[in-house]
Length: 182
Image (tube, rainbow, N blue to C red; front, side, top):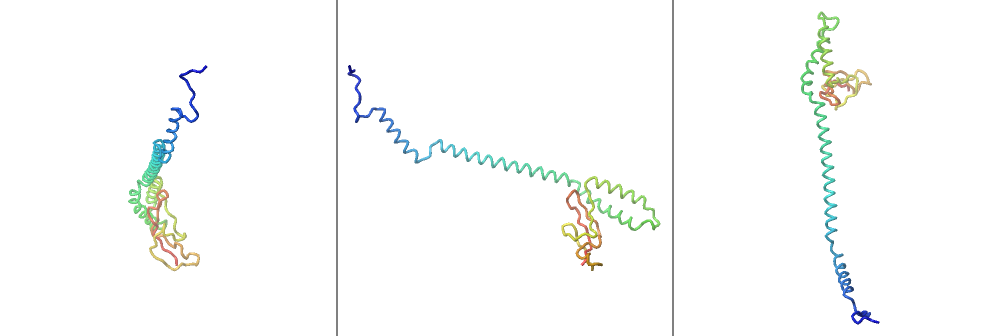
């Protein structure tokens, strides 16, 4: 028994569902040529992530650079004060050299002042530069004049130190004024 309302479609006939599938397949072929909205959003998302990562890296570099500069500033904050004290230190050294044990003046007071001052500035990071007998280095020494070297091994080396050089931490704050052998 067959139901008169229900008849099976013939092979050549298409059902309405088949028409919808055909239409859908046709529109899918058309959209593959142009990027979909989802693809556009994904590419925009990737671009924004890249910008964000670069911005974070740039900020991190800025933060590190600022901390380094702040550290350097703290280390050398007393540089101007120490530079002002250096001539006093030089004068005391000269006075000690002038009035030694053979002299008439008692150098005990001068030595006491010199030792106190040396300890005070050493506590702030000041270190004297040893130049005499060292090879001339333009990054550390300022050549005042050149004299013939008394021996062959002193050529290109510091023969005499006119004024001491000083480091504050690892930074040269005053170059040593020296006489170089030629």
